Amino acid sequence: MRVTDTYKYGSWSLVLFTLTAPWVLPLLVDSFWVDIYSEILIWSLLAASVNLLLGYVGLLSFGQALFFGFGMYGVAIGVVKFDLGFWSAFIFGISLATAMAAIAGSLAVRLTWHYFAIITVVFSLIFYFTALSWKPITGGDDGLPFTIPPIISFGEYKLTMTNANFQYFFIVTIVGACYWLMYRVINSPLGRAFVTVRENDARAALIGLNVYLIRLTAFIFAGFIAGVAGALFALFGRYASASYMFYHVSGEAVVWAIIGGVGTLFGPIVGTGLMIVLREELSSVWDHYLLLVGVAVILTVIFAPRGIGGAFKVLAEKIARQQFSRKESGP
Amino acid sequence: MDLVFALALNGIVWGLIIALIALGLSIIFGLLDIINIAHGDFFMVGTVLAWTVLQTTGNYWLAFLLVPIIGFGLGLLINHAVIQPIKNAAALSIVATFGLSIILQESVRATYGAAPNRLVAPIQETLLLFGIQYEVYRIFAAAIAIFAICLFFGFLHKTKLGTWMRAVRFDPEIATAMGIPAHRIYMVTFGIGFAMAALGGVVAAPITTVDFQGGIDILPFCFMAVIIGGLGNLEGTVAAAVLLAFVEGIITSFTDPTIARIGSLIFMSAVLIVRPHGIFVGATR
Image 1 (cartoon, one colour):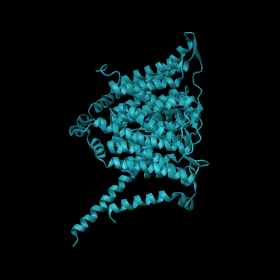
Image 2 (cartoon, rainbow over the protein chains, first blue to last red):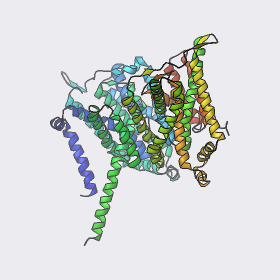
Image 3 (cartoon, rainbow over the protein chains, first blue to last red):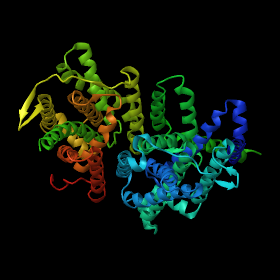
Image 4 (tube, rainbow over the protein chains, first blue to last red):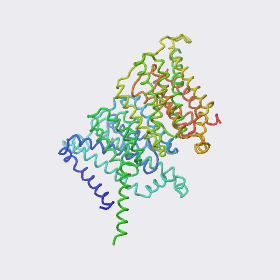
């Protein structure tokens, strides 16, 4: 089997599984795994936003939860305070997150590495504390629950997220659209520019690229993706809470991205899926399963800093090289 | 007015303790180039160890001696197991120390338990100070913190090991070429960093609560002190810690403490963007 084939079969089986999951998962394990799978898809977007920055422009953000939180609160506040409909609340949340990313990014991308990581944490902490203390708007510690407005209503008949299958496919569609968008951006000239900046920002500047603008674009795009994740999670959980803006949430997303493999499009899904399944399976058996998570993180950083996706890539390339040389030496 | 005074005094005491902890964070950054997300948990481990010493021996004073030594040992261990292997991937040090932070919190939760405990201060007396009854223990805590900070600076400037540490920080390659065992210096630095955070834990344990999540609040504060003072600028770190805690103390006396915290964070971001090497840069050189 050629490498491109493995990729192709891998992604097609992922797509097939995703499309049939609401029927297959209840047969195989339990119907609550459909919800877990939706959750994995949503959280993988947050990990993907970390991956966009770390894997493609070389900036480690420890504050992506900020934009997740803005997407989340945008939806909840839109529904509760402004009485918005489904789509307008959804778009409101995403725009809020994207706008915040533009503001935070214009300041943050002036810095790199350690300083960038710290300032992204600081920004997310500022709004975390604000959300905690601004109780009339955000609900503080208790969060802000809401009832979901219908998506489309034909007189009596309404399509809402309360229909499990509809909710699942709504999430799949949005998440799928986000990955398609990321795929298009990464393979566009802009994506090439991202990678150039990651590899060497001084040379990128010398060949005429505007490094600041490229980093800012990536930051806003990543903020947008995190915002979509937050807005989806608000609709999925029917509430928004300040605790999702804490730096531990950002840290978890970084962990998922790194374990899955930064710099690969589907790495974040693999990492997020693995870690959430581990959590669901282990947390009921062993109360202190987090110890394992910590150990896994450290081992990944030490032995496989490119994660599962990176290890797979290396392995695939090795096989390809062997096949290639066998062909060369063949009759 | 009395309240403002008490809170300002509390702020200075707390700032000195934070300075002690943040110094550890600062030397680890300055020498090893590692952003230590687990540093707050080093402090938390210190409070838990202090509680354990009090439970087993019944003598709190012993903790002041024992806990930093245990902390130093734990620091050496962690340095060997986690920090040295990732030295070549400094970029991912934040992620590795995040994992370390999870491990420390979870192991404390598994052994010590999830319920927070309050410690009775070893000194119960209060003192009439400018018209308010002030706890003597807090003054004692500040004194210990000052003593430890002075001891650290004395060590850094007056001993051979301290000079070596400064040399390795200045230029690791030339230091190694001059025959300084840089590898061992890294080890000792990390040990001292942990020991200082742990001592901070012992000093602070009777003032705050002993809890496996106790480090989470401390960490941002330490980072603020280190950043505002200037990454790697040790004197700046101490000054910034005391200044921040003092100002937060005063602001807290007339508004919500969270607002004081938000204010400091905004100040910190401004410092990062405008003067990324700290507000005291130029004052020391």
